Length: 218
Image 1 (cartoon, rainbow, N blue to C red):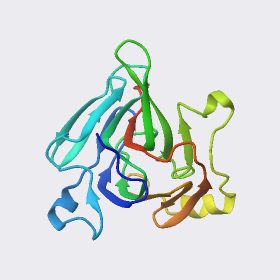
Image 2 (image 1 turned 45 degrees about the vertical axis):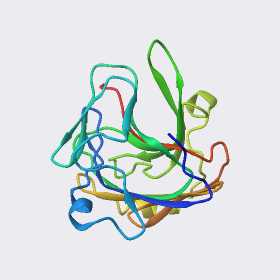
Image 3 (image 1 turned 180 degrees about the vertical axis):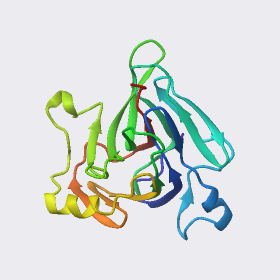
């Protein structure tokens, strides 16, 4: 699939993401399809099929249910990602997410995959954290499968405690929360419910796919 020119500031939107460790609903776009996407944005999910998406990693099963992509984690020890076939460079991604069960997840962006094991792929790249815990680190940036825990690095950003506290105060457990990711060149910024969180510069990768993380069942 031809990558989108990274000189273009592409706007993409997904209405409704709910992730958990066992049962998760991803990229529900019923509202967007009914009302039309926000001006200048394009939806990532057609509301009916998984066209344009591919599964990588573990064994989670994905299906479309009532305008939402639902993923069910199976007894695998590998994370599973539902990834966009298209790649994006400069963009604004807006989405809403809700956890239906306890868990931890994230949204991949500017990501890629490499072979790992027989017939499997390991997704790596930037990940915006999603955590249902009111004291969690939603919207902070982790480098999945590349410069993460194995290198002693947890967060790529150095977001101040007071900034995190302001974002955490907006968290609505069990309800929809809005996440925005903006990438322009090496600039990476995130917002949780309209409150700025991460603001960093990093040029490890400037183009790649989006992906939703379904953690393995515990």
